[in-house]
Picture 1 (spheres, rainbow, N blue to C red):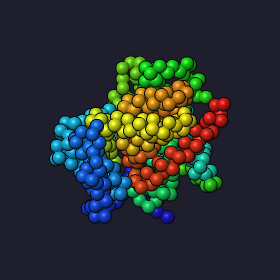
Picture 2: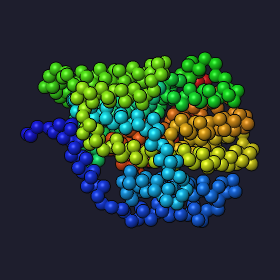
Picture 3: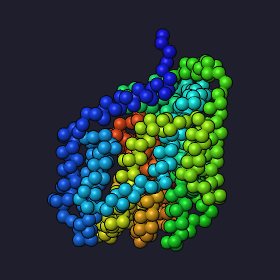
Amino acid sequence: MPPDPSPITLVNSTERIWRKREGRGQDPVPLLVSLAVGLAVRFLAPRPAEVTPQAWQLLSIFLTTIAGLVLGPLPVGAWAFLGLTATVATRTLPFTAAFGAFTNEVIWLIVISFFFARGFVKTGLGDRVATYFVKWLGRSTLGLSYGLAISEACIAPAMPSTTARAGGVFLPIVKSLSLSAGSKPNDPSARKLGSYLVQSQLQASGNSSALFLTAAAQNLLCLKLAEEIGVKIANPWISWFKDTPEAPAIAAQKLKNMGPVTRNEWIMVATMILAVSLWIFGDTIGVSSVVAAMIGLSILLLLGVLNWEDCLNEKSAWDTLAWFAILVGMAGQLTNLGIVSWMSNCVAKVLQSFSLSWPAAFGVLQASYFFIHYLFASQTAHVGALYSAFLAMHLAAGVPSILSALALTYNSNLFGALTHYSSGQSAVYYGAGYVDLPDVFKLGFTTAAINAVIWGVVGEVLSN
């Protein structure tokens, strides 16, 4: 039998496949449907008096962009660039505003996380770690996903950047596990293992962020905003927390064949320990998450673990930079131009007209807060724009204050897995190339409903 291809060979071959897919040009039916969505909003739907023509036009372009991302007339990056071009060409946004999100720290943290993943693959460290996972937990695919989810939950309280956990720690392991099982990105074999691990880990990241107060930056922001409205959560940490049987033997043999840990693997380990330490303790010394990642990447470049050609060849990183920055920029401008506040006011008026009981109002408000996230490309931006307004609506409807504040905060984490652009970690996992875009939206909606049952029903029983 011929030897198994190396991880780098697999990555390069899948990049060639992806280039062929990108050369197909536009698909006419999805193109026309996507354009029709935006044109209908722009020219057929009546513009509310509270919304400016500029804001309404931007909303139509944004909806066309989202429709195209779902239907896929062009690759994601290409279609997002067309949306960006439309905002500038129609003078809906000035050039600086349209490109403003390209300096967003979270986006660059995502990009650098792809380079870390490349380092894990190139040095063989990811393959070694993945093989240990298979040896210890690999009697079933479910065991692998449980092991990764438990690891995510253990790390989450000490690392308040979900994006850093996803891109810097777990994506390299998931990619190596998948490649070792013959599951390649942007390939029919992606469904063999990679798509399952990517989706399960994405959902685990949202739930682990909601479990612990310090597991995500937006949790502390929610706590602060709640206090400003008069909702004080005493002792918040306590209140918050209220089959493949032959795989292990194969893995053990593979570890023996790998031999001792190499120099570059040790450098990769030391660099990641430094980066993770800075992600955990960086705030106390004034080092942000993205600066910590930049320091780590600089070390890998200086010591020759990675070279600049490796970074240039990491096509997923640059593609993610393009489309995610475009969506973050559009979503931010929708907030600045008043579209989001107009939508929240509409929800408030509907509640007042129906005179709902507080449990019914609670359900409507939570669902509205959750699904409005389809218009956001940042969890923190969503919290900053809407958390206070929705908490005030809860209190006005008679919903208990602590329940309102905590439920909104839990949802601020859970909706991070709703779409491929709904959070930094979503962009990281989607960029790995193991999940098709329609599946992202379908699974995002389905797991949102499942999470609502688990957190709303089971959580309520346990809290009582």
